[in-house]
Image (cartoon, rainbow, N blue to C red; front, side):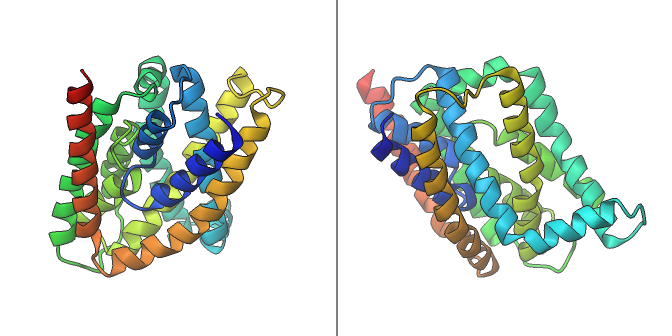
Length: 265
């Protein structure tokens, strides 16, 4: 991967992390188009680093919310901030369990498995379509809702299943207010990304002294800047119930990926 490819992948990650079209799926498609020959472990490392950049974008956009959550958590009072923090923690449990128990199996999905990405994009399109038809409410996220949405996030580890699409769709289908669903979706992933980065650094999976560090840094910056734009845009789109457009997009891209895979074989 060179610097131009890193910028392209970074922009794709920044835009697709928040838009419900699967950032990991699009990264795999982009790597295939760019002729990436990385082994699954290296490919996954690129994905994780770029996800880290968009996690920082989330922190910038929701910095006030995060500060209230952190301060509320350590006050040990049963207030709204403390309850929201507990819900975030509950939502993390399914993804943490899947990530720890099936780490090696998950790595194998990040080596250009375009057929899988195509099918998962079609599933994402169906989720978005159902969510777009759901009635809007003013309901908040409950503790049970947090676990269900957390399961959706765990399933979205698969490339092609949109994390934001799956979590926002499941929230809306549960009757949660669209704006609150988007806010919860974007905030719940931040601890997971930082935890994954910390784990990879400790295990040596990410080598800051490798020759690819400069290339990854360029991709990181591109993902961070494009992520700032996409995060704000997505919140507006969810409020206006525009998910059906993304459903159509995911369906078309998914079908094309499946057809091309069968044609090549």
